[in-house]
Image (cartoon, rainbow, N blue to C red; front, side, top):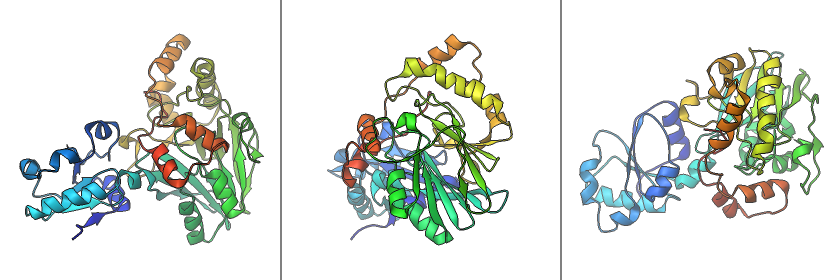
Length: 376
């Protein structure tokens, strides 16, 4: 008999609410060290599944009696088997993680950021297992989506719940760490797909050119999404100032770090573009703008309400990447502190260009692993 399951949504709520949970992760040690469900309020034990095939008796004294225990594996099969073995030993606080880490990678949690000045709302979609952030701007029956993931049904269904039509879909840049759902979402909804042309020189599809100074109105309440050319992560990276309140920085600036310039093999060439964007273009903007990035690196970047957001002025004071006066020191910091490349990043870039079209299962495999868009 199958044991009880926790869904990715239920676990995400526990992470955001800082609830206690004991994780028994039965993947290999390398897989666990590379990427896991993260929360400061969780306890962890990593015992590979193959070490438990002869029985779970030896780990019973390492498991708590006063906390729920969530057994985690890659896809949800091994966790069921280990969970059943634990229940046979008399444990009653066991759950299997439904869908495993693949489900964790794909879960999106929509959170309202705030109301907008002239009516309308702004939502952030937190892809908690992958560190991706995407957005929906809603006004007077219309919506725009920024940096959509490949789980396009989530945005379409959410727009339907709100009773709005998605008219515009934007990508701040050509993504390399995850597969964009922007083009597919635009096709699904009949919206316009916008992409910076300097990132689109090799794409195989038609798109609207997102260029510096572009204004796009969503609804009748005139929410302007102003394009701000901000190269550095990619040569075409473009930021948005939304409703004169929010700066959507893509993968240029994060809450606790800055973007990496090497995912197209151009770190040495693009590092000073990155510096000019951060130290010149962004310095000219209002300190009161609230930065909404396309990724977060660590769970500490989440606010109490689950959103990832902070005023630009605060980041200029607190983000180390914005406080390196010497250009040579900045170049060294950016080029010598790069994390490993994202899994399958070249294939992901080719997918986002439309050059290859992997099936759904292949796309899942390509995206498995942590977010690696930032300089450490």
